[in-house]
Amino acid sequence: MKKNLLLTLIVIFSMNIFLSAALFAQDAETATDTTQVVEAATNVEADEAVQKSGLEYYARKVAGSYLVDLMIDGGWVMWPMLILAIWGVAICIWKLVQLSYAKINLNNFLTTIIPLIEQKKYKEAAEYSQKIRGPVAKVAHAGLLKADKGTEQLETAIENSSTVEMAFLEKGFIHINTTINLAPMFGFFGTILGMIEAFDAIAKAGEVDPTIVADGIKVALITTLAGLAIAIPVQFINNVLLTMVDGLVIDMQRVADKIVETYVEKK
Image (tube, rainbow, N blue to C red; front, side):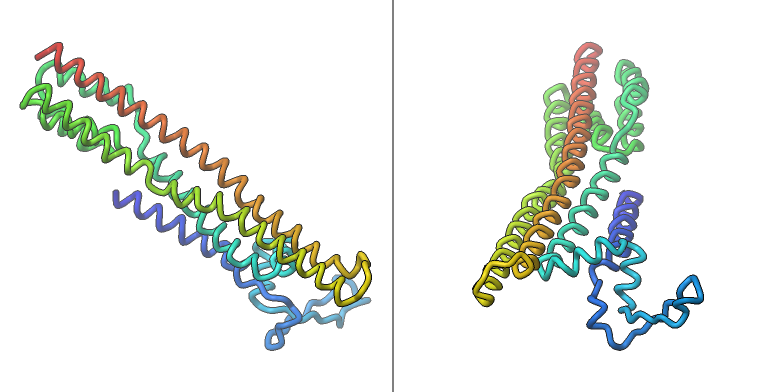
């Protein structure tokens, strides 16, 4: 558990460090305190200087100029979307590490505990299960602790433990689904703001000119793109995680059935 918690903290911390550059990206025109001089590769433009924000410069190095420009052009709606993306991806990675750590070699596990159950060495089987990580071993351990009290007690213990472990496996999916649902909604919200900006520009100009409405339409398209760019990969990862959970549930069921079957036969 401690190892799993450590991995979780490392993943979330790394994600925030990696994406913090984009979160604090600022327009170069507003940066007046920080100046970086860029010298040309040739002698023709050796004295050219460009003012940049230190945070923006770092963001462009890490995330790329294209993404930073999208953040700036998309307006303030891009900020909550970026926070949502960091949060959603961090939860996905945490869940992926958690489920990967919970997976065990089921055949090796059964090969070890089934002979002990056949020999009615329930205590030894329970001690071995306790040493193995993951929900599958915990379900087996809970049942084997009650093996001396009869079949009904064993089955009840397995059922109760399975319920607890299922709750453990399902933890985090609400947060992932929140990201999947909110990202397109924020994108649509930005689209509405962009269209309002475009029509407001038309109203002030008194005529329809592509150059007048270009900025508003650009905001609308960028925010829509950002919402889909967040939701699509997170949805894919969510499906992968659900498949992993289904595999662990099947393993728990197989272990439970095999323990009860062997216990009843050898009782």
